[in-house]
Image (cartoon, rainbow, N blue to C red):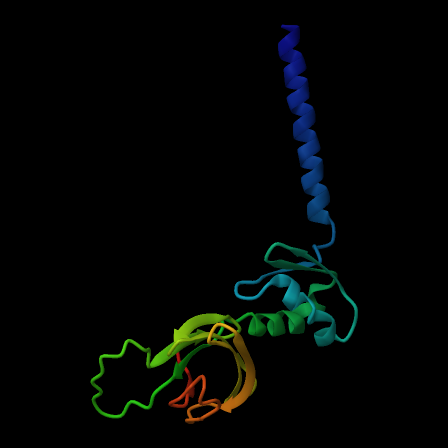
Length: 187
């Protein structure tokens, strides 16, 4: 019978302790923590923007793909909306390699277009030239197109072109003999 009373006493102490913690938590000030979960960009990259948006040093922590803002959460609403607008999926592009008008019949296996994703490296081969292409939006109608072309297994051509969308260009005949046109794929 002694063992049962000791067990009941332990349970009773745990119950009182839990009740005390709940009352203390309910009576204390609300937590000043704001958590932003990032989906498309690394939390470290987005967190670097916070001091510039708020124009002051603030305390934050990064936990995986989350940014934890510490302090008065009302101050962080501007930062929160800015970070959410920056955490967007990358844009997709189509890089046209030939101007296809009407019907086209060919036995060539060469692609007529390449699909690109903003900020990501795309590797392909075009007429014996090994290509690595990366595109980054720079304005409403312009993008920076970076290419690394390996010609004849030894010549490496690295180019950066600031190009207008939806216009045919002839940037380098060694790499793109028929010219190129860059289009943003509209969702």
